[in-house]
Length: 112
Length: 113
Image 1 (cartoon, rainbow over the protein chains, first blue to last red):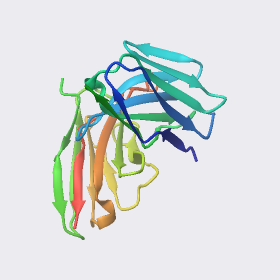
Image 2: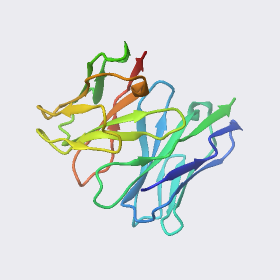
Image 3: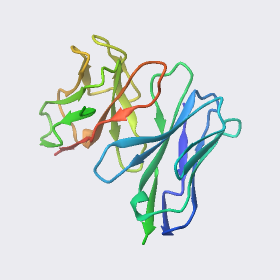
C-alpha cells in the first residue's frame, strides 16, 4: 500500500523567507502527484498537479518538483506571506487507481 | 457556480443513531468521493462513485453506505454511528479521466458520543 509522508509536521518562518515543504512516497509507480492547501475549518484547494512524466510545475510563487525514482516531491514557496499560513498536503495517485493517497500535511505559519 | 457543497456542516450524534451526509456538485462531474480526515492521519477514502448509479468501496468503507441516484448528488450514510466515526468528512468531485484535479467541499464535522 502506498504510504505518503510529509516532514516537518509544522513549520514557522518569518515573512519574506523562501521555504521548501517535503513529501515522500513509498511506491514510485504513481500516475501523478498533487499539492493541496487547507485552511483551518475549510476544505482542500488544489495548488499544483504534476503528472508522472513531468519534473516540475509552477504557479505564481509556488513551484513543485517531482523525482519519481526517489519517491520525493518538494513544494517551494518564494517570498512567503502571512496569507500563505495554512496546512499543505500532498497526495499521489497510482496508475489505474481512482483514489488519492494523502500525507498528513505540513502546518505552515508565516510570521509578519 | 457553487462548486461542491456539503450538508450539514456540524452534527452531534449518540452511539447507535443514524444519519445521512449530503454532497452536491454543480460542475457536471462524473467522479465523486467521500473521505474522512482524522488527527495525525491523512485523508482516507471511504467510498467513491465513477458515475450516476455506481458506487465502490475505498480504503475504510466499514460502517458506511453510499448512494449516487443523481449525478450531482452523493450521499454518505451511517446506519449505526460509533464513536470511532467521529471525524471530519470531506466530499470531492472530479471531471473525468482526462483531468485529475479534485474539488473539495468545506467538510462536515461529526461527533459521535
